[in-house]
Length: 473
Image (cartoon, one colour):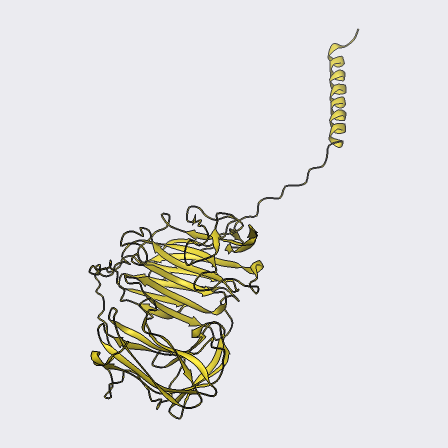
């Protein structure tokens, strides 16, 4: 007689063994799966505190994609503004986050048999808007003719005081890819259009070689610009108005919320278009971080400062050191200043009561080689005379004018071409000031882009007020 319990146990064991053998056989025939690597951990950068400020918002670009809680894409068709060539897209080919940086990339392609450019523009509008504060951005610009990176601010409601420029604009940084040794900080406002601008030119290296920190401190009655912590521009006397109406109460238009925007333009009226030297493989605007701080409170009880106008000397001359009797620094912003831009190379010196300008490379624009004196008092309705002696080592052309750096670079004395010969000549020009009073007219001698590098000599420079009836435009 069989033992039933023992029989069941044997059968059960045999069944289990068969199952294990079958399972092992099936497992043996399955492909081996590759181990799944975990997503790399994102290490968050801690935004540093800033004495006297609270952090309003920041983006250290530590992740793998754009933070859409902070940023917007702002697409536009080519030619949207400034005759720029690029289409601003929402493509991650043009805007992406990589290796701890926001990358805005300009891409050259072909469309309908013609060159076609795409790029990116991002803003914090309606997500991170603020009124007053300190904006700090670390960025590395691309190099190349026609490339135009920018860090700037516009008002949330552009129609509050009227369309640009009445609404105001704060440019924290602009660099032209054709001259990456020079950076610009600018504020636009008013009607008529006015602007004030600061310029920083590096003694060595470029803004494309490495990251630099660009910042602006915006307060109710003053704005201050910095590069790598060095202060280079202060503005406190802006205005805005509708044509034919009184100015809005100061500090309009900069008493409303603004937002930050970053973009890389291609071509346009200022940088010019790309050419065969432009390498689009490297056309990337890199941003390491954007940080916005704000104080606990701001004093909004501010008044617009009164303009101070330079007075003439005992001979009636508004020009300082017009006879070049004093040897002065020519690389500061006081009295005579010698400037180089856009491929211009050269030097200037004062010797024997004469300003001598040596040109090594003429550059690409009229102002590539430039001698200026600012703070010329221009009063609406007044008439003026400019006189100077000029000659050169060989016959060549140059341009003289009185410009308005704070009023959209309009001309009070129009750009006037003259021909310097090897013999000294006295040149005389008269004009009537027809625009808004300006305490910062600028006498300019522009010697670039004239198919000559001949040395120029200037002496006995005068700018004086004359009776209106003497003036002939």
